Length: 394
Ligand SMILES: [Mg+2]
Image (cartoon, rainbow, N blue to C red; front, side, top):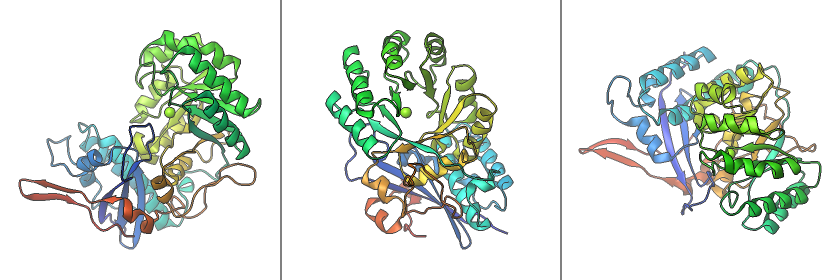
């Protein structure tokens, strides 16, 4: 019998965090141990807040610390993970950070189960095979159109057949500036590669501002416009989806559970649903969204902007979906993001990404390299130590 003996959290950070939209500047790594087996996961979340949610004393019966619901539980099959997942959702229903914290634990539990059963996670999820995915290189718009052009050209030279530009200056200056960047991106890529644009929620809830960009997006064959509005501006998404003839909408990275994702699919008119297992509630919730999307004519895509540990977790959840052919490939992650794993998921000779066949996630944290990023956290209340970072070891 395999019992969850311990769950620990490691706050990793670059020496300096910049006010830029790069989510790989810090990380929260989760370690779950059962006997001789260790599973790893990563939360796409503010690390310290999430550690606090793991250990904060019970506030009332549906506001319990997240980790306590998993400790001491048996883990032998996927059913055990579903049971623990449900228990955490119930016990911490009133703790807003719980979805983020659960995400890291859930991923680590799947990795742990994969190692116990000596199988990759996608097989445990019921897929017979993992189809290669076409990576779309995820890049930030440059400060100038010339810079955006160069980034696009470089991506093509590096062998990418799909590129997404986002954030940066887009939507922050004039309409003409946005047009110039889209023209530069398309010219840099050439005619064939897929081009997507991520507006990074820049228009909040202003539909008209988004509508003004549609003719250019259409003219330069942009496959999707991502996150034009705040994540739950569902009416605005719905309105824009009706007013856009050709350009599809993408979103979903901010979904914190499968119910939000379903609303974005069914009500908000999103065609490309982008799920981050590090936010939505782990591999369990992401796979549920995949199953739902797969029954429709919409497309499931991962959202990944941190490490290749997170990338593997995301790919496992839609590995068997041949129709869902694109994957977000984090192109500009920090040195911490690169150092997070000992191996990386690099494009093969056809420029596609394939999952490793190793057990669990198929790759592991680079514990040696990560030591220098580790921040020691000590949470003390009334003289009692609630949390002290343990040594980062296997
Ligand atoms: Mg995005």
